[in-house]
Length: 129
Image (cartoon, rainbow, N blue to C red; front, side, top):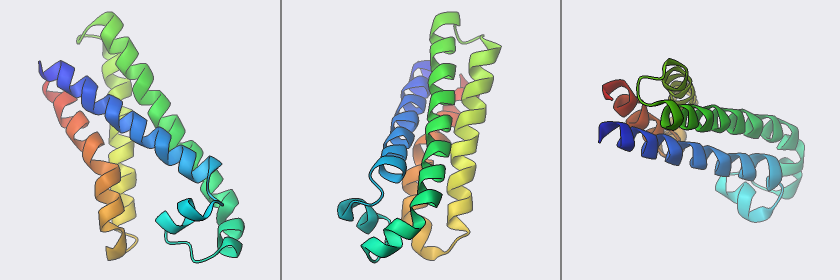
């Protein structure tokens, strides 16, 4: 049961990071998106687009790593070292990125908690499974 919950939370964390990828790498210059990230105007969104584009792909790569770990775990069972290792690395990296975001200032506490809660739960459950 714990293994199933670990996979569910890891999958949700991966989906969240795919969504973040879409916001940062695909939709960054759209007003609804840049307002979510506290960007003041279109000019600033255009100027920060290359940074956001790059950052979005980091989120996508973490999501892909978690997804591959999930697939390996499902196919090979909970004893699969490669799947478990890939999950732990991907979820740990997602959590670490959220912790780094917190160090950027108090106003980032909410986004960091959104970004880091699912990976944290998935990481703990993966360790317990």
